[in-house]
Length: 102
Image (tube, rainbow, N blue to C red; front, side, top):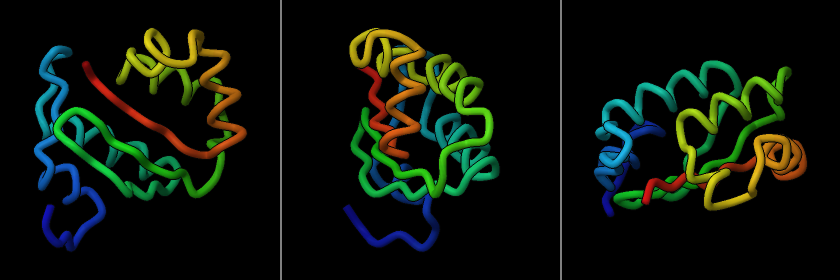
């Protein structure tokens, strides 16, 4: 790991990707930038296939946000919380995401 000047640099430094879903580092950065425009995010951990982040607040339409997160990172539901509704509740309760692509 190295120093980052911009919040999304951590993803670039870690070279995080989701190649099993056809997304390389810059595709992830683009999506995370869109999330940041919706609600500020703080990415505090990234590895080659995982990203952990905190949301500054719960998105206004948390149901739509949860559906979008599921489309972006299906493993968060399919290998994680089990349903998009459970993901929505988790986002509301924790204001955090643990994204992984295995």
